[in-house]
Length: 205
Image 1: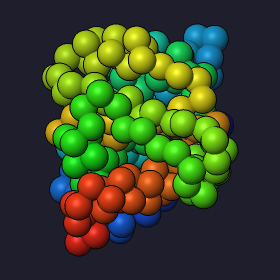
Image 2: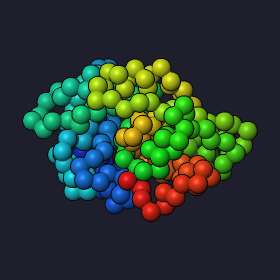
Image 3: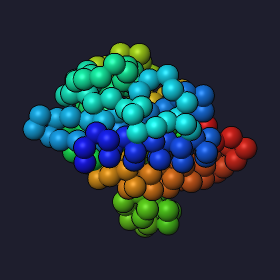
Image 4: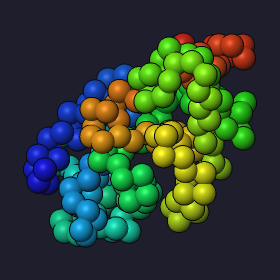
């Protein structure tokens, strides 16, 4: 995938997530891996309405999340995208500002435990007898701090991370798989919140 193809795919996915209310304002960011030797990612540009992106509203970044070319600034979280792509071998990473994961993390700061739920299959796990713990890490404006926290708790079988009082990162082999996993995680964490007596059905961003 070249940068123009990546730009079209990222714009389409951003519009989809914005329509769901998961990228309100200019929040959130998406990336796809362009190459691994050296590592290169296409990341949505900073400060833009994610519902109206075009194929040119992306930035190519390197191993550290620094821009390789172009004039648009990459997302502030580009360095964490690059870290996830490297450690998890992800082909795509989506960072969304859904309400359900943030509330679930508030009630479960040590990690959100999921078990015996059919929707776990869509998340890449077994529906029964498979305990899944979604890691929760404290928020930080320093992507090195967040990256270290992600890597310390990384489980190859759990393609998601919740940043407390911030949002969620979900990844997959490509944008479609990352989206499907994000959709399933949203359902799973709404279930957790409902069981714990919290109603998040009215807000999903």
